[in-house]
Image (cartoon, rainbow, N blue to C red; front, side, top):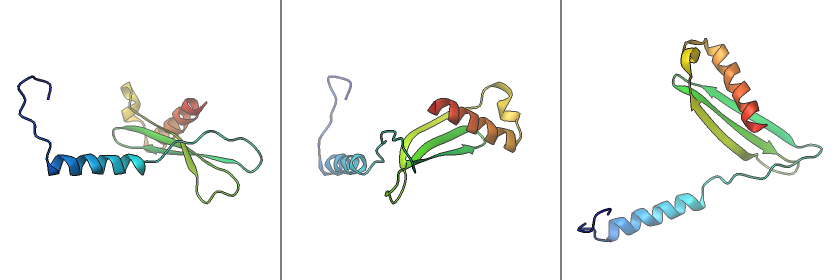
Length: 102
């Protein structure tokens, strides 16, 4: 595809893959706008795994059945962070989550 003499044929398999990608995009989780006000709850979920930190911020407004995602973040451990205890890794994930969401 990146060269002039590329033998590419658009066939049934390619069309099916393209349609599948379009469906995945349509059903992807959409990030919502931040809402403020009485009864609005923000929840920060964190995971401190073996390879790094992951966190996500969700918001649930009154009348909503389930929360909406506001953002997703992750990063690898830096330096000696990989040697932290599981509890310290979770605290680090919470700290990074609050910092990223601010």
